[in-house]
Length: 139
Image 1: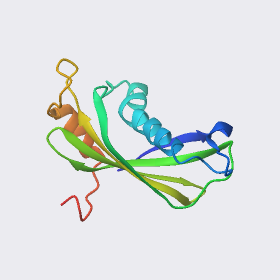
Image 2: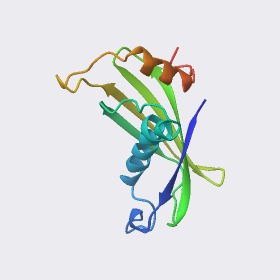
Image 3: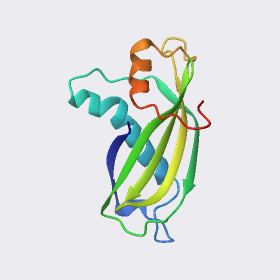
């Protein structure tokens, strides 16, 4: 299963080349991740998860530029790998059926007492497994 979040492309997201600035895609990814782990859970009366996670790695592949603001971009997000204290999230950003970008982030759960990585607990693991999609590399 994939989580979907709609992000609004703002006028300020466009750069001097007239397309969405590359750095803004990480903001879209962050908004989708926050919606998946926090806001959509809260809206369903569930406890938000992973308020104590950090991004250890982020990568982006740009496929097709977007040259307009004022539109909605669909961000699909799913879990590609689950480790002991980390997990990999994959993203696809599209509009009107056109894929514009792919992203991947490595998230690490962190103890707010020690500021060091901590094991993913059973509730978090169960949640991540709901969105797990096996890929050839995740086996």
